[in-house]
Image (cartoon, rainbow, N blue to C red):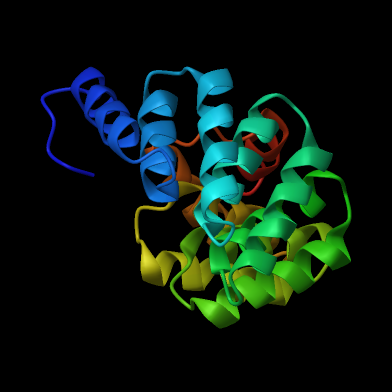
Length: 206
């Protein structure tokens, strides 16, 4: 993104570029990103579709369209756009990560795990995919796998609060209460709002 004093200037700059070259998919995409920064999602959506029309292989445009759909509560639309993203570019880890996230939101845990593992195979440092995978394992009752995935998240980012929360739940499940308390405290210290029922359970084991 070029240096701009503000988003308005950036958007104006992209509009000028498109005025000179309306068939440049990247410029339509850049304009859409600026519009999203201004929370003009309907206009951004039009620009993203224009970007794809000019350059069908802009996988990021499909992901952004999926994000807009997600914001509207349209999980099916989000899933569809992310499927198009991985068709547009083989090995596009972000698309697989989002597909995994949507499947998990829909309670399709096995499909979520498959997609998230794919995302990680393409980018082993994709922290969000490791974190979502840890949640998917937890939902599946695969407690040891969940712990391993959360520890990987913490290895990548020691301040990733969700991972400590998930570890607290996993260790509670295993009956390893000291570790559960320790991780719950870390999550809270990092500003994570631990669910009241988990806190209640933790307090029993202090």
